[in-house]
Length: 153
Ligand code: FES
Image: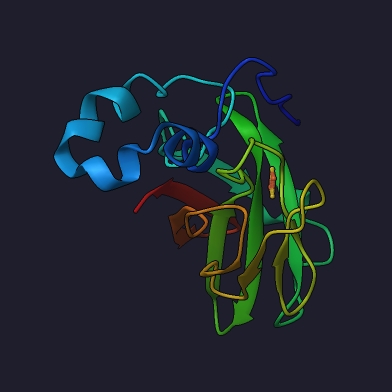
């Protein structure tokens, strides 16, 4: 799922540059607040789960080898969830949501890449290169029998 940027909205950076409010310090706060909700998602929070998700391991093909990843979608969450198996019954899961403009990132073996504008994250979801401005949202993962329960951390 991708999101199209608002063509009439200014990014915070361009807004600050054109208005000179970067030097105005606290006086800029109300003006910056007016940018919330714009198609440019810089600085917005990444959507959290509205409920725990249980996913059978059988629905994550290829994830049985340590280091392998898989992704899935659930009707309760608008973005795919990426799961990685670290061995010894240890899993990690992240939202694929890129906070730049809402594209979905991919796990590429050594980290995460956003296909839209090239942002990158480490294998732990820590932001390495923008234009995204936030780490990926990591979820808590519990193993229950042959299923994973994914919840907000
Ligand atoms: S949406 Fe622009 S870098 Fe991800």
